[in-house]
Structure formats: C-alpha cells, structure tokens
Length: 316
Ligand SMILES: Nc1nc2c(ncn2[C@@H]2O[C@H](COP(=O)(O)OP(=O)(O)O)[C@@H](O)[C@H]2O)c(=O)[nH]1
Ligand SMILES: [Mg+2]
Image 1 (cartoon, rainbow, N blue to C red):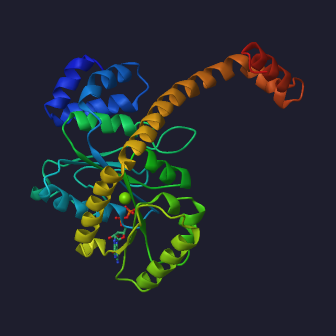
Image 2 (image 1 turned 120 degrees about the vertical axis):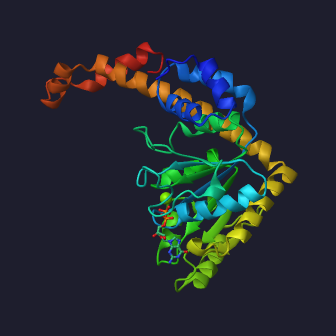
C-alpha cells in the first residue's frame, strides 16, 4: 500500500483506472498520513457530484432499489458510482448489491464499492466523504450511498448526501422505528418499498399523518412513493423525484447550505479521527496497565489524575 506516490495514484484515478480508484479508496480508508496528501491532490477535481443517500433498515430493499436505479441514471447521462456502507452485506466475488443480483452488460462503467462502517464512536464511515472525493476526481458525477444500521449511521447520511431517500417497508412499527431513530425528519424522499405486500397504502397514509404532525413547514414537501424494487415498479417515478429534489435545491439555494454542512462534517470527521487516536494513546500513557489494575482494585482513584491532566491542558 502507498508504495505508489500519491500524485501518480491521483493521475491514474483521474484517468479512470479502476484499480487505482480501488487503491485510492483503500488509502483514504486508512489512517496513513499519505491519505491527506492524496486528498490534497484530488481536491481541485472534486465537489461537483450529486450525492444520493439510500437509507433504511436491513432488508428494506435498499440494494435492490439501488440496482434498479442504475440503468435509469445511466440513461440520463450520469456517470454513476455506488458506495455501500453496509457491514451486513459485503460484496464478494462477482456478486453485488444483495445476494442474487449480478452485474450485467448494461451496467458497465458503474463503480461499486463497499466501505466498512468503522470507528469506535460509531456513525457513518468517516471515509465516506474522502471516498466521494476519490470518485469525483475519477469523473463520477452521481454517487449513490447505501447505508444501513443503527440510528446515528442513518442520521449522519444527511452530511454526505444532497438527497436522502428513506426506504421503509409496510411492516408494523417501521414508521415508529424511523421516528425514534430521528431519521424521519432528515429524509427528502420517502419510499414505501415492498408495495406488493399488504398495508403499503395504509403505511403511506400513516407516514403522511406523522409528517404533518411533526412537520414544520418547509419549502420542500417530501413525497412518499410506493415501489416494488425487484420488478422495478415505481422506480422511474423515484428517479423523477430525485431529479426534482436536485433542481429544488439549486433553485432554493439550499444546495449551498448543505455543502457547507457537508464540508464541515467532513473536516470535523477527519479531525475527530486524529484526535481519537491521540486520545487512545494518551489514555494509555496516563493510565498504564499497572495503574488500571490499581484502579480496578480501588487502590488508585483515577479522577484526580484526570482533573490534574485537564488543568495542565488549561481545561480544568
Ligand atoms: N416482496 C418484495 N420483496 C422485496 C422487494 N424489494 C426487495 N425485496 C427483497 O427483500 C430482500 C432484501 O432486499 P435488499 O435489497 O438486499 O435489502 P437491503 O438490506 O435494504 O439492501 C431481498 O430478498 C429482496 O429480493 C419488494 O418490493 N417486494
Ligand atoms: Mg443492502
């Protein structure tokens, strides 16, 4: 890793070489100092892609839906890449996006990559914004981000995506779950997938009511769409609404606002990442294994040590 100088790697990424893109993303996922060098060199070629987040509970149909979106987006002239932040379904071999779906001829040119949702603090992989920059410098201008998982992971998606699509299924409690997780308020588009099942229309009604109850008036009225992902029903309408939201953001100026938030989150994540490592090292220095043992045995009180250290940092 990183034997190739980053400027050569960025040049290969810009030439669209798939292996270079893969290596560059692996580099930005790492904590190697070269990752910042690579981002520095990629930066002038980034910032232009339209980023669509697809989020929802495991099994909601996000991958199937993502796969169905691809040919539509390609037909619209987008150069599409997919980032899947999904520890539960890593791609392996030729299988992509879910267990059964495979690449077909029509989808050549789509780049798909899964990222681990790493980081002890949780949340969306801190590498996502960096990976987006790599993809942008490779010329991709539409990036789909599939995220799954605990509340925070889903909520953070708003800081990387311009448009957030929340995928729900007509199952009792799915709306309540999403409300609890705080995801309801951050979605720009709602999809009730598995509309072939009973209760889809009922759910749309419940969701509409829930949104109106909690809803402060916004400029954008989030649509609720019904889809059947495996056969593509409703997908064309979804694409239209994604485009409409894109236009709305540009027309309303919300786009700039989001970009500011995204950039702050990206930089904060990188700083956080570094500080987190420093914190781990520092904790080990302050509290060596013997000290920990004494704390556990009650022989040493750690809190005066901590207070003293904070004071020495001017934080006491
Ligand atoms: N009946 C039905 N099954 C679906 C639908 N969409 C997805 N599925 C199935 O639900 C399962 C989970 O789909 P997947 O896309 O992997 O969900 P993800 O975990 O959200 O990415 C798969 O077996 C899909 O075939 C749908 O609209 N109707
Ligand atoms: Mg999936």
